Structure formats: structure tokens, C-alpha cells
Length: 230
Length: 230
Figure 1 (cartoon, chains in turn green, brown):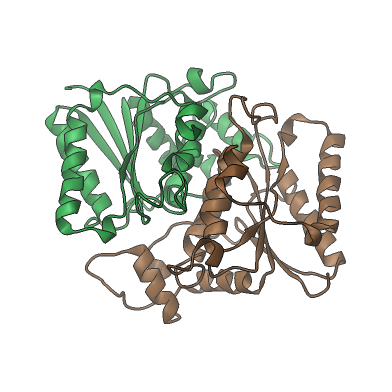
Figure 2 (cartoon, rainbow over the protein chains, first blue to last red):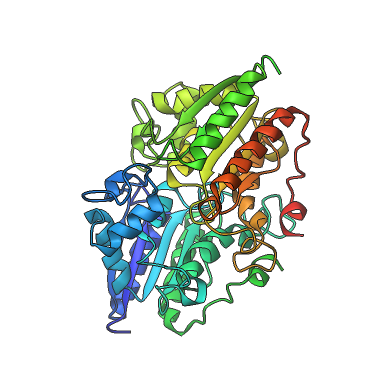
């Protein structure tokens, strides 16, 4: 709906990839709805994934023994995080919906996107004990993991060699998003696009566009162990 | 035992941290046993976590549409991976045991270590269909995830707010190590070291040294869904 803001955090090296197309489809469909859409194209930005002392501008809270979590928390409070991190935080703060678009690498997101999580979702900004999980600081936002796999749907079935795909969603959806208070919509998964026909890939893009038409009516999943492991 | 080779992949910014001490304890104890120990100190190496075209030396297999998995597979076969990646592969190839030492970041490893997995364990080297899981190309090696947490053991208990700690081990132990044929020893977890006394932290270091004394007698876990989710 007009006025809603969406941040797409996108991690693929190749604009011509299916991930690139899925990202474009989302920008088009959501813009058509009147949403304001921002894309963080991590590879194009050469986004820094490493959590280091460089993320803190100026002096350290404790220069004797570097503790990344403590230092970024302190830096956040005094406005002293590096500009690439605070820029991403600004985008997150404004967004109603966060879409993560990526190819599954090793049962998880690519390192460049994991670095976005590690560096952007700092204490004070995204959570601050006891404000975690349902009372996380980013509550009232939605998230959606949209990704492609190398393995087939059969491999990722319960009893399949790679196990239920939901098993690997736990760290990302519960451990990151839920921890920050962000509600989680059902993931959008394109299985093994490299092994299907061009026509089937077009269907995948259409299915994503169709889903986005009614995305604002969706109810979040119940992000508890039952959803993942039952 | 003399002759055994160990690679410790280590990801912490601060040598004075508990992770730094756990790494040192492992180097000392294993060296004392006569093992040959190599450490990849990822932050000190400024290890590159991003999977990009820079990982391929020379021409691409398909320069029209960049596919990282295909390009690194082809590059591996012709000896055309970037030297930082092939150097890590050489270390892995020589090792009998891989120890991953890190602080848990967001229910997973820090991005810099995820990037090590993404870039080093390429097709052709670590797996090559149908050589995956029990017939992965790195079979006859052992692995062990040794990490510290922010949350307490109670939070990571079954029924705890963060769920059974084993849930989050699935992508790392099964999705990465088992996929490559590497057997998995029980993880070594130091819960919430920042919230315990200096004496308790010393006990943690001692417990790790003690475990390493008999590490070569340990049986791998049964890396199947039952271990993780039952």
C-alpha cells in the first residue's frame, strides 16, 4: 500500500542471475503498489563483512581488550559507528518490511550478508537486554527470507539427505530476526533453479510477483521450535 | 599423537579474549602431543569473506553470466583459484583434524569464518556430486566446533528462549562439514564467559586442555537429524 517502506538486502554478484531477477521483480511489484523500495546491493556496494575495530569512529571504550559487542554498543549510543553501518541502520529503521534475497550458501546466507547482520544489528539499535525476542527493538517490522538453493526440494524434505529446509531457517529467522523483535513471514524458496527449464524459471518469477501482491495481508509464522522441528 | 596434523581456523579480533586463550591452549596441548598445528588467524590475515570474481585468476568459464559455484569449480580444476584460497585448501588437505574456534555471532559463526567456508570448500576440492555427505571428498578428516556464547546455558536449553543449542549446530556441522565428508566430534561450548568469574574462565580453559588430551580417542557424533532434533 502507498507509504509502506521496504528494504531489500540483496546478495548476488550477477544481475542476470535468478536472484537478480527476483530482486527486480520485487522492486517493480512493490513500487507499483506505491511502496517506497530501497535496495542494499551488497556486492555492488562492496559491503564490508568483517566485524573489526574500524566500525568504531574515534576512541574505544576499552582499548586494552577489544570486545566488538561492547564497543559497537557504546559507539552506537554516542553516534560513533562507521558511516556504512549507520547508513544501513537508517534504512532498517525506516523500513516496514525487510526482504533478504540471496542464494543459499552452505545452509545459510553468503558471508557478505552474514556480515550485514553481524555489523548492522548492534546492541542498542536492534536489541538491548531484556529487549530481545518479542520485545526486541525492531518490533513492528516484518521480514522475509527469499532464496534459491542448489539442492532439490526432495533433498530438503523431511527424511531427505539434507533434512527439512526449515531446520536451516532456525538460526536466520529465530536467532536473528525474532531475536530483534522482527516478525517473520513464510520464506520464499526457489529450489534448484539451475536444474530447471527457462519456462520453469519464469514461473518462479511470476509466483514471486503474485505472492507480493498480497504480501501485506499475510500473517507472520509462529516463530517457535514447533514451526521448525515438528 | 606424533605426526597428526591439526588446522585451527580462528576468528577473534582480540588475542586477550577467551577465544584467543582457547586457541593458545589448543596449540600448546596439541603441540605437546607431537601434533603439527597450523593456525589460520582470520582477522590477523584480514581474510576476505566475499565470494567474488577476484577468486578466479585469469579468464572466466562464462563471462556473460557470472556463477560463483561454477567458476570456482572450473578454476579449481585448472589450478586457477586465488592464492589465499588455494593456500587454505592446502592446509585443509594436510589436516587430520579441523578445529573452528570462534564466538557465536547470531546463532552462527562470524561472517569472516563463513567466508572461509564459502570460498575454501569449493566443488572439486571438498565435494563433487555425487561425492557429498558420507562420500564427500574430505572424508577421513575430523572437525570440531569450539565456541563461546553470549547467552547462558539455560537460554540454550531445550525449552529455553533460544532453543536447544544443537538446533543451531545443524547448518554448520551437518550442512557444511558432513556435506564434505568430514566427521564431526562433539562441539566444545563455553557458555557466557563474559558473565562468569575469572576463576570459572580458567576452569573453562583447563577443561578444554583436558579434553584435548584424549581427543584422538573420541568417536564422532552420529551427524543425523536425530542427534540435533530429538
